[in-house]
Length: 200
Image (cartoon, rainbow, N blue to C red; front, side, top):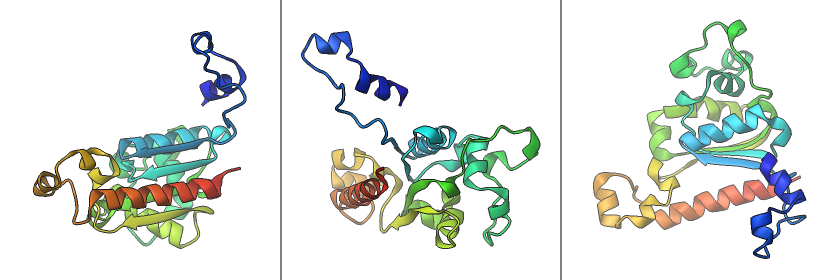
């Protein structure tokens, strides 16, 4: 993100020699951190650790069990976890002694966030999907959206499913019942609409 700010202010000699310049053409005040699976957890980590650089966070099926402890604590503040009727043990790291853990600089409850899951992970109750749904449904997240994409599998967030013959993808279970182009279009539309609404 800092590099983006620098690129907006100063030319890179190698690019300038080829007639390419980004000076004044970028919007460094609009930073949307986005990712899928481990990338979704990374987007949440970046956004929560640097809220000063964050316009919004878009996490497609974030692998929250593997997110750093401080990020899971920022996602699930203890006061909200205690209200949630859905069991939450804090994931693979647990909650442990809160005094000795570093904290993120922000809380998900205060940020613009889009988090959605495939029906596959939602039905398996993976990655705290039910707890997140409860938080969004009960107004614990001030600005954002939660959703589940019907008949979608985890791998369909990537383009892998469009590069694999459909008969093979369905045979090995990486594609759901829907056409992967249809699910990709739904992901794109929901993501772009959210980004458009979140712009400064």
